[in-house]
Length: 220
Image (cartoon, rainbow, N blue to C red; front, side, top):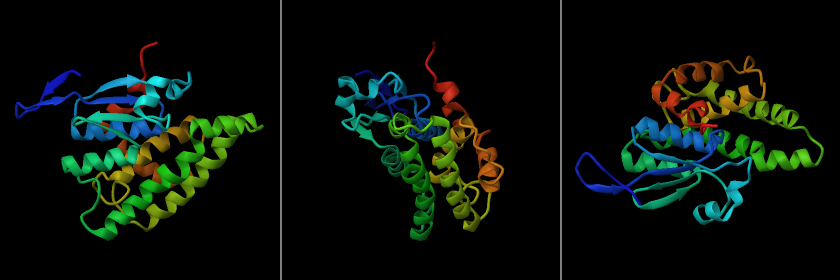
């Protein structure tokens, strides 16, 4: 494994992200890495070609999913577990200092990553299509349901530029990839004004721009 030198001069293993450019989960981790200014090398895993269930990826991630992050000499899977590891080890401040605040931010993040995203996951949606649904119809049904609940959570949170106040949290890192998917599938954001406003505040931030799928897409 290649090495890079930290600012302290201590040699550490290279950080490697195994991802797919349109994966919401991988998108979250790219945002986190860019927010922290951590250099990383991306190794694409093409979900549309089924590479996630191939032996190479299964050796990294037995669930047959992305992302997998190799960092600090360890291998991590599951995007929220990765982000919380980065938060804890790098002092990112993505979770509030009080228990109630952390629970509130986690509820917002989980509403995306554990409720909306799993039912819109590629393998779930493809199975639905095999049973007679259309991909567009499936996404246009479930994404607005998830956004409606999330909008309600935001309406009762402390108002600010972002999901909770004026600091980027774990919830913001989860939100923008979901907004990207909503737009991709033609979901109207007009019924969700807080979500649209938060997304508009997040999109110009350099770390969010750097992590965008258009930047992560492998060359043709």
